[in-house]
Image 1 (tube, rainbow, N blue to C red):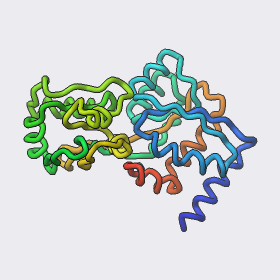
Image 2: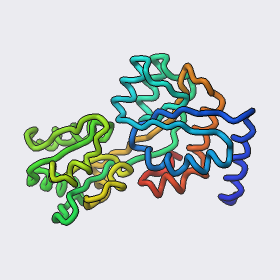
Image 3: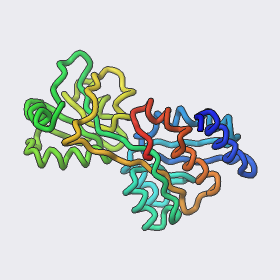
Image 4: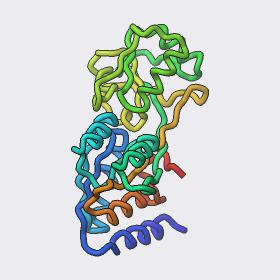
Length: 246
């Protein structure tokens, strides 16, 4: 099936929901660039409006668990969506995986490009680095575990505050090298993107959407998540440093 035909069918189905809806989306920062590009075409085709909020993954969890996160759709890594479903914060059976994301690295623009082409090369680069920063999200927690396994001294690395892009810290000279989801590093100015980690030490995070248990627009919320997982959204995901989940 040609992409244009699929796109027309997918959007026609979503538009078939009775009346236009205001869909509130609460998402981690990892999918921000992709959703911002998808939103206008989705709104134009369906008549629905997306009100989107982007914060760090830990802040999303904190808001929802405190009963403060007002949303119809919640987007986080798949394990966090499962936790929120188990806690009754999201609707049972509403999880839909739609994007795969790799961890990448960057240094300040103009700085020498260190070698991260293999696990051993990465270890040498880390040991030679004066300051390393990782995110407060899924990629950061993975990297902290990797540093421990590699024996990297703790005084060499720090974890950024929730919602802070590690690339911005490197661009300002506050760290020598940083690690975060590719989709969060790619748009940052003032850094030299080194690419994803090699397969022997790389890590994949799957991002998923779930419907809030108290969603004002549950039907529209489910339709939006299905659209994000459809081939129609795939080109945008790829352009923003992610891959479709399927």
